[in-house]
Figure (spheres, rainbow, N blue to C red):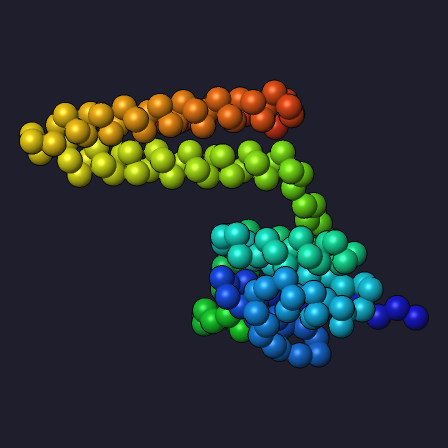
Length: 189
């Protein structure tokens, strides 16, 4: 006889709030704490995680490596679901409970999480770094454009950031030549 467990987890930087059929608990968002907790679960465990940032990543990857089925959920889907059930509160415990209810009701329509390949990780990292450089370049340009005394240093700084962006773009192209199926339209500056 196998026992099945459905679990909802609200992930934050430092901790994971876990709602299962048996308990509500909080553990540290560290490999050691996650591994210790995962070892207590039955073989047939289904874990739902909301993905507002990267805080869910460690749990998702550790759980899949231990044979658990993981569903990474879009927060934009969870909010209307919670409101539809009359839940107005927004706490980590409420979120974990809503995630568990959601996977209980929708598991048959959800796609299990598949960890990214090393190339996909590298591509995502480069894209995030590129977006950060673009964001800061635009902020510098906006903040200093009307300060005449800083026009020359600003021009030099923006030119250096453009060189950095070209370098990142070359790295992205290199990754995409290794994995052409991941190619999409080039990122906007």
